[in-house]
Amino acid sequence: MGRWEPDAESRFRAAALELFGKIGYEQTTVAAIAERAGLTARTFFRYFADKREVLFNGTERLQQTMVDALTQAPAEASAIEAIAAALKCAGDFFDDELRPFSRLRSTVIEANAELRERELIKMATLTAALAQALRERGVVEPDASLAAEAGIAVFRIAFGQWVDESEQRGYGEIVEELLARMKALTAGA
Image 1: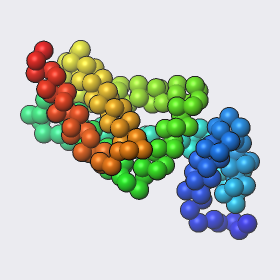
Image 2: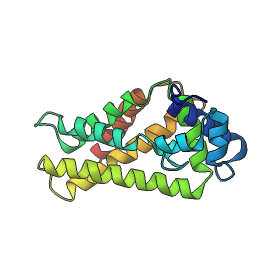
Image 3: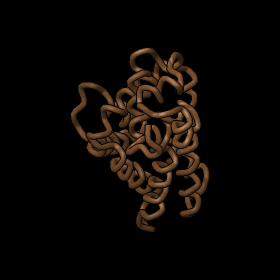
Image 4: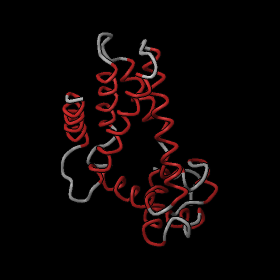
């Protein structure tokens, strides 16, 4: 192996997901991932802190993108409209090219309690960041937290539908539909 390997991060991710799918997350070692990728374990640790990070790498970028979209929503936008802007911009991450990876990622996470817990922590962190961004826009409590929680519920349901094997619609289209359904549900309240 040479000193520089092109697209090592993607190769590690593909190798890890293949192994997670074949032999399970718990049985997959970093050494096995590196071997499958044709790289070294030392190189693996340049890209990922541990094998979990193969599944959670990029979380901070998604969060920042969503917070930025919320912050840039028009000043007159309601809390829910600002949250909707954040949800819609997440569609930039979830395109058809990423769907196979996301489907397998979801399957691996669902099969492992430690990873499910990590996913819940990720969602809680995202919720807190969105609530804080709403507070910075002048939304008071408990409205900021309530809007952020509702937004993350839409996010989770949309993502779950998007990764379903039978789903053909894009993430953005699913989010639009769910936001409309949420609006209809709350209109009767």
